Length: 231
Image (tube, one colour):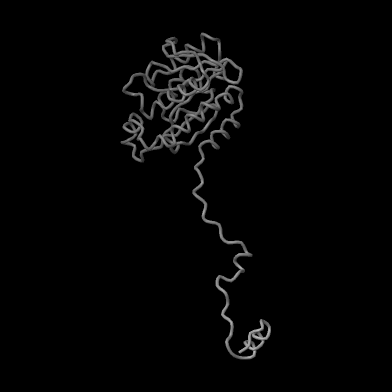
């Protein structure tokens, strides 16, 4: 069984925070794949369903971000699963908005939820890092992470979350590269409107206006004879 943990903070006041994009992605997976209703268990909200024919558990820790490892660790111990059965969805400051990276293992990168998971489980689980961008100033990081998404962010956030949900079955099947390819295709910018096509070489070769015929001289006389025009 695969356990997919979306990280965030519980409570309506945090619902739209950038830090809660892991919760948003977990909710989207549950909707897309018709999982069971959310219930309380393991200090979390959990729901069950199938991804690509395999049983999966979605979990949203309700311990607050800094203690996420307590909740996820409890769930894994209950099902007698190891870190290899876990995928974690979370926000990443050091990725541009809308970018996604997937890897197994690594450091916490300053993310307190990941630091807690590492402390309880070790680092050897898969991580889906969802870029929220950096505000550019260290002093503004807390306000950025614990701030609501801007309305304009929906242009990249919603298609990205939908794509993660749609292709979660690839995560369940262990096809990480296939998952990333699908995400890249679903979120690549649309091409700008094409420039009007130039004329074909045949049309370009055609004169735009009828050439002016000579009125006098040998050429004029020849043309008059050819077309039967007398003077």
